[in-house]
Image 1 (cartoon, rainbow, N blue to C red):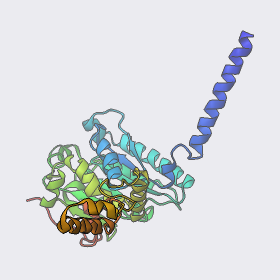
Image 2: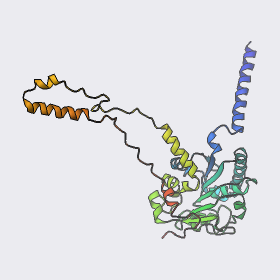
Image 3: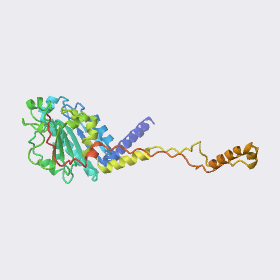
Length: 340
């Protein structure tokens, strides 16, 4: 009997594991994956810069897909990750296979990448490994330690969108240690995070966005990791991954979840007419002046409108800054502003 009980429990565990595996395999684990997915790739060492900010910022901006943090460091040491380049290259190849599998299971979804520092090399190699006919949507590079002369033509063949490079000429990490250790792709050229991507294939689909004083309001003052603040993710970076359809869906969801309270009737008003005093009550009052006052009061009471208090309409939702600027600033033109 005891052996039968153990066999029954073992069979139940195997059945549960099979159900979980089947759910993950069919993409049913998270229904948001059918909408879209954005991978955030941290820099060397995977110290967590921008991990929380990317997910929270995109969600606040209206992104309804999945935001996944892809960890690739084996050493958790920035200097080793920057020099042992095979680690980053191998991680990029693995991520490329993951993205391909995701797009095969969700052909209508969009895949985006956001990467920081050495992680931009991982993202670039991942895009190059995506198998056709699948394509990545947009790629956002922050403080990239990839060479500014890197050939992006192979990656652009596997993309339907653009590459957005946020760079700052005053980045202390790229202008200091990276110059000594070399770029993540093994050169000693100027990093893309200092001057943008200027290599082969960097045409109209590569948008170089230099640091400008207007970004200080979002916390980016031209440093290396301060471009990953929550405000930057929500008001600047989100414009590249949040679609108008996502904004509309998010607004409809908020309105549907808003509790509806029944309208309250003002105690000062009544749905019934005020009874008119009888003639006998009027005659009890002394003098014609009192009768005139009573008649006037009755007239005002009987003609008073009956209505319920109306709730004021809700204030319009605040549009994200990047959505207001979309009509004014074209993302297809590079910004040539550098740090002073």
